[in-house]
Length: 481
Image 1 (cartoon, one colour):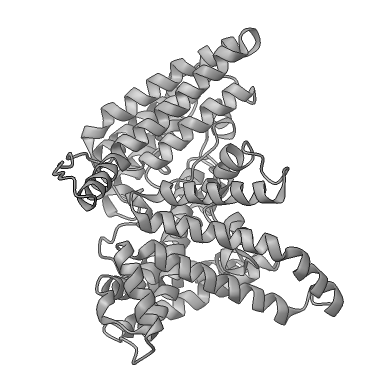
Image 2 (tube, rainbow, N blue to C red):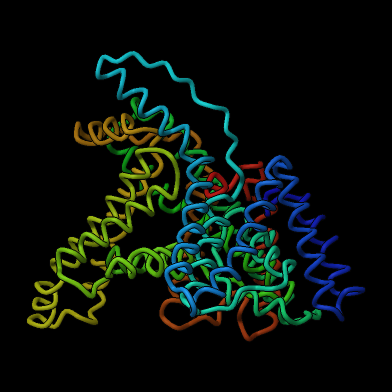
């Protein structure tokens, strides 16, 4: 059930009304209702996956107290148990998301070596949001082992954390402690939460329907037939796909944050003006923050982070980003996507001393042109990464790079009229708002202190979405993860 679908909003209203009326005085009753609603909404997407969601929830619910009991008395056993939790989480993810890919790759390898192999892949259905809720469970296990949190004794609360319906489909990947603490008290209807949440949802609709869905028509046409396109079109499509990725995923994140806020629950922010990043590392501190911070805390830092030799630090960065790529899906294109970003972070770190000397010698820091240049270079590097992410196969990547190298030609223009009018105007509005957010001028649009400006902005946004938004059921990019 997509968060931008009509049926979701009917379901959400059905959840919200009793939540703030007959259940408002009891945190327990509200949480039971939230858990029930979360399972119903998740089951609507694919009811066959409900037993899996329940099974992993029960497993980790009982595993955590066992880890906590042994943390002081038998540290080795506690570590073993937490390792079991990590292995089970990764195993579930591997089975449903990567098994068929591994079988296919081994089959191709044997055939290429002259060893006949005709192993057929199994029909394994990938549960919606599996990459998100397995990472939640793994982080919960690790936090309990580290002693940062106590095991959640209330199964209803724990189940709600795992299956919370605004975030289970595509994140954000909430950390257990701040989320579970919010479930310990009841939530009353709050005009500020309802208003702020509704604004976030509206902004998410604007990004998704007026920008991402408009661009999607063009990028799909180019990347699905990349062999026929020249360098001009492929470069434009790569740039547009980075914009599409951002507006699609941040649009969902705004909606998820907004829906949660309307219920009085704060979830993790996922984006912070990534197009204003001055290097790729900074880009990832602003992009998919719940994933990048998860990888930092549970992979990069435990491997040694930056508190080690320079070469070891480079290795840690590369491994972390390769895992980031693999997390996105079972395709070599995602591995290349992660490797590319890892290499860009490594190169930036390697040249940092030279860059800082040049900045000091020529007093470059703080100059707008220098900052804009660095932001533009970062954008181009990330656009290339977006091309790797979007390409359907490794063969398509080779084709795209070859066609770009063969030269340029006329721009493919089919279906671009609405994209370069409706979509471009919406993108300029978004970029202007994010520019003001980045440089400390948030008193704009729906957040203006002037009531007339707020009401006018909200009205115009609704009318613009209704009149120009692509309302077809184009699923979110990150639903596949």
